[in-house]
Length: 136
Image 1 (spheres, rainbow, N blue to C red):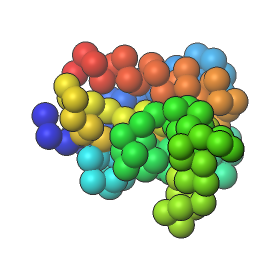
Image 2: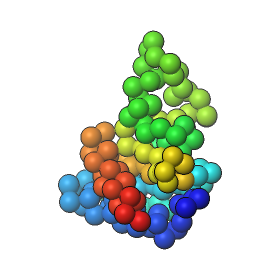
Image 3: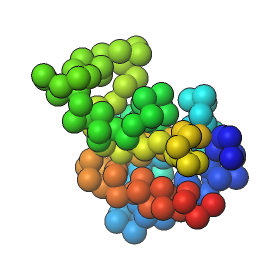
Image 4: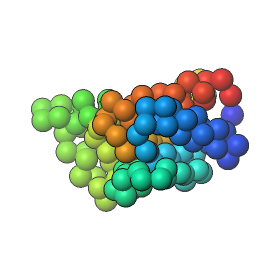
C-alpha cells in the first residue's frame, strides 16, 4: 500500500463515526493521504464548527510530522525539542491529541484527525479507526 485509498478512508470515517455515536459525542473526522491531501471527511450533526478545521489540521500534523498529535503536544512544551512548532505551517500544526499517522510497516501512508470532544474522546474515536486500518 502506497497511499490511503478512498475506499479505506471511507471505512475509517465510518468506524470513527460509529465510535463517536457509541460515546454520544458528535465529531468531525478527516482522513488524508501521504501527501496531506484530504481523501474523506465527515461532520456529524451538531459537531462543533471549529472542529471542521481542527480535525483536518490534526490529520495534516500527523502526516507531515509522522507523529501522533499527542506526541507533538509532549515535545512542543516549553524546554522541549519542538517548542514553538504550533506556530508554524500557517498555524496548521495541532499540539493536542486526536491525530494519528496511518502506516504500512514503517511508511506513513496517510493520517486521521478527529475533533469534537475532549482530547481523550477524540483519541478514543481515532484509535477505533486505527484499529480498523490495521485490519484492512
